[in-house]
Image (cartoon, rainbow, N blue to C red):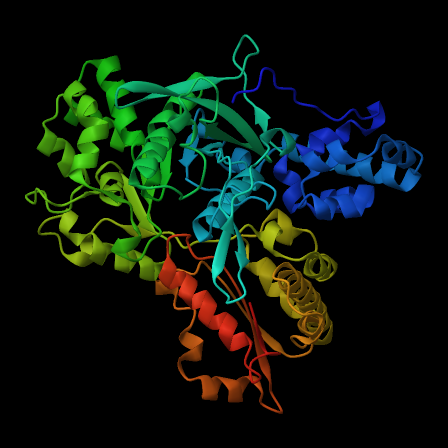
Length: 571
């Protein structure tokens, strides 16, 4: 049943508090401690209950609370300081502008299926999303002329909980986009901007939303709009959900629809960066456009388009890469390859390693490799693994000459350095560690920090981690209906004063989460050593359809319940 009318209610703030909305709607707040402290100071309980979502928080706070804060001089000074810092950040001359003033109209379009920016925007799953999120934040800090494209999932990635046996269960809460730090993009008439892609015999429409990540706009496509048929509204329902047909529709929307969205926004990128193979279909849309614009054939357009494409592969095993059977590619791309003048075999060979094998499926990584001027892995070792994996794409080329380089994954410094440690760096290094984190000489100054003070800060962070883990463990036990005695024991789990090892990863089997338990007796002896005890905190999700990964979690939960591991290992 469709609603007769839809109303979106926005918070009404006193004029002097209006900067709160501007701050909330730029994800710069997610890596700015002063902004986070501002929202905590406004309403700490609401900040926690909304999952650190300032957009939702501002719509739930009672008006009386706003008027109280208006009368609080300290809060108002804090607000003015944060608003001024954001304004200065957005307008100051950046590192890129200073160093590459001659770059001119350079514009980079970064495509990814997921982005891990903040927990209140749940459109990410694991490391790929965290890398993509940090990429945008770092690009913002240095002023890289970058725009990003992704999908806006109605349910995002699932929320995890465990049953009494430790078996992973999934919840799929609906995302309320109007209460998230994103906004609807509009056209010249002020109406929501939509684009369409051809999927088999019909048009599928997608609405364009925008998340502002500091200086970088992230454009997100969502198909859950009334213009679409019910099945098409589900295309952007879940991240990595559904079957192969859902996946190929999502990747058509991300790649081909993403190119169309940028065009509708008037953005003409110089470089298209494919973060993993999910967006590789963007090259097909670019080729089709070049053929029409310049009256050239497919191969000529492919050469021109590939010159502006970059591909980053993240997956070290072939099984982790999207592949589609030839029959499915026929179903979704028959019209395309006929339109651009390719035979069926010529088209399918674009995504095949062995082009004489009619049975070989269509591989999205190979598709991206064949349509990119530059390809890279995400570490030196992974670059070597990738050259070995894809050597057959370049016949008769020695493995060490396969043109796949490596750019080692980094992190966004501001997001990952705790406030406690940041204050220590400020005191002994000065602000340059934030302003120029690439300068090695700056980090050499860490030697000036007294060892005792550095260790005290580390211990304080560990104490907070243990308190957080105990609280989460208690919540899990309460949700499962555990006896009060078991819930009370959650406060005794872990020790805030001993070496703590964290394992926070996706529970894909190749990540080998249970390897530590290969010799349980030896591990128990190490963990409970009288002089040098150790403890381990596990966290992570298995894909809903990955029963082997779920079994890994269940095994760890059962080990946690053994007396020799009970206080030393938690999930």
